[in-house]
Amino acid sequence: MTIQEKMNIALSGWIITRIGMIDRYRYLVIAKWSNDDDKNPFRAKDGKKYNHPARMMSIDLENNKIDWLTELDGWSYGYCDGGIVGGNKEAFFGSYNGVTYHLDYGADKFEHEELLSTDKRRELGISRGIRAIKVIGNHIYTGSTGNQIHRRDAAKKWTLISQEPREYAHKLGNSSVSSLDGYSENEIYFSGQEGNLWYFDGKYWEKIFGMPESINFEYVLCSDDGKVYAIDSHGQGVAVGRGKDFTFIPMKKEDPANGGITFAATHYKGKIYLARYSMYEFRGDHWVKANIPGVYGGVEHLASKDGMLFIGTPYSLKIYNGKETFTLYGEEKEDAKLITKALIETSTDFLKKGHALLDEMDEQRRE
Image (cartoon, rainbow, N blue to C red):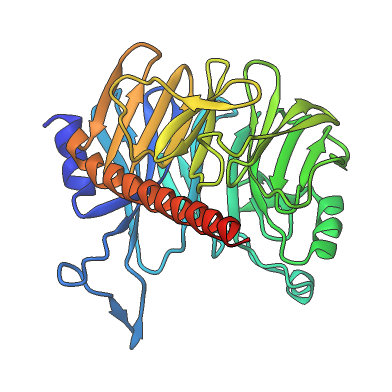
């Protein structure tokens, strides 16, 4: 059985919600059950109703198999990342309700690990929800509500390394980490709401000042072009820099990525890509439609590692090596659902703007 046939079985009836990578041969997927209640209604356990289940898996292309296929009831929206930690292939799956799982290829095990909320954190209104996971250097890092960054030092042993950002988060209220990345464990960045962008030099955290508080940074990327990019959740602007020196670049209203909902971002071979149904490439002060062969629309998930770009829609998965695109799961026709939805939304926005312009012209005539 081919890997595509195995993927069709593993994801039939499921909607892809997050992707990640360990290396060029091993890919991570989180999916949720479709909202087809007739096919699989809400599950009841102990007299309680649970949300539709979530499914986590690792795809091993080198050995043509799907590893660690795990299904959980009531698992909140998840995040994942993987890499080489201490010479060993590892990955981590985390959810917004704090439930996490560690995948260890070397020890051949998949274990539950939970970041428990302390009494002090609860008093401050800081929960345990995970919003970002990243393998940096020889550790796995997580970002969570309350602007907290944890480092995994050993099995089920986590160290909070973000005391200063935590204090700042308390002033912000419900702020949370949306993304983190780093060139090394002595140079880490994380982003969040209200222009929240932080830099860690291995000892101290420093806030990057000068960012507009109206901007919510959804992604921070340490690109292999030597620059760090923090991208707004609605494509309104990009902060570019490194260390403590950043410049915020606002996007023009007519920019194709401005104003919509952004789903994912990644860097790949010196370029920055953004997913918003279509894929966009950053060109210094604006976004343009990306030209990736075999990718037509519906894109909501991106990940990259070891010279490979992993691209996902809710119904398909593709791998791009810089020249050719390989379909891992799904067919191009499945993306038509998302393309149609995007076109309808675009047409609706266009009509709204057209009616607003006509109303304005009528008002001017009356004056």
